[in-house]
Length: 176
Image (tube, rainbow, N blue to C red; front, side, top):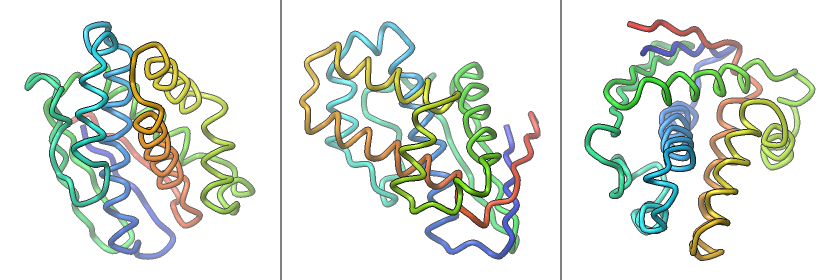
């Protein structure tokens, strides 16, 4: 799968990497919350938080099976950033792609809000809201520590903010 993001200006390096990390976080959040074998295992969530959710970590969460792990290659050409997503589960990648498209297409009034407000608003409705609600439900149904759950939800809010940057104009998908 190839996602091509077009910006009104050349994105900062952190904005570019936030797109990559955002797709990855949303992918594993959806995978872990919707697949019953992951959902039932609190270790998968705890190992993910213990590994770290910052931009410097470039690995799949330790609890993800090798067949479910994705690989993302990020390329930039000025105002265009491409994410090539390979491996992993196609159904989950499709769901995350739909969430990303919805976030990119958010109204300009929403995109102009500060990041925290924007993420809060966008995580309450539509495909993104459904994904976040699913992750929160999965976290609350197990013995995941509140601190770990809050860390994951904060990361997902950051990811939602990344896909609704004010200068992000569009996303095009090429199934490859």
